[in-house]
Length: 116
Ligand SMILES: [Zn+2]
Ligand SMILES: [Zn+2]
Image 1 (cartoon, rainbow, N blue to C red):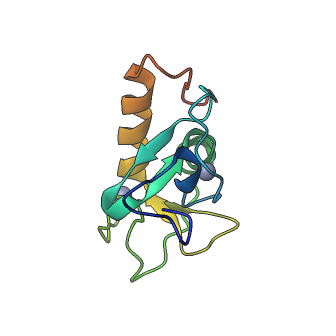
Image 2: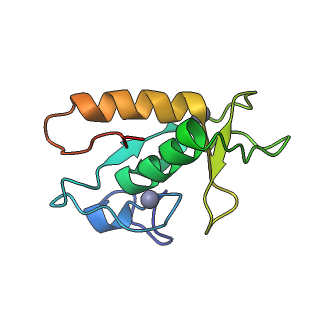
């Protein structure tokens, strides 16, 4: 997501926020990369780690019927993780897996998926 009032013709790094914790993107922090979803949604590496742990290791499912995934905008049947701070932000298991695989391949970042 973008900070309210962002100048769309001149978007700065700090205008780009993670939808799940609303912290701005810091391109100098290699441990907290930002993954882009559909319609300007973003998920940071820290929230991705939280989601991964909750869904993969704890078997948690925060899915609410009728609420699509913030990242892929699909209403899916697989597990979902909801932001503890911003309930309107949730991410599905497929997006968590795809994002993890993509981030681990990205050599600009030091992100690794959590280990049980
Ligand atoms: Zn985040
Ligand atoms: Zn999704």
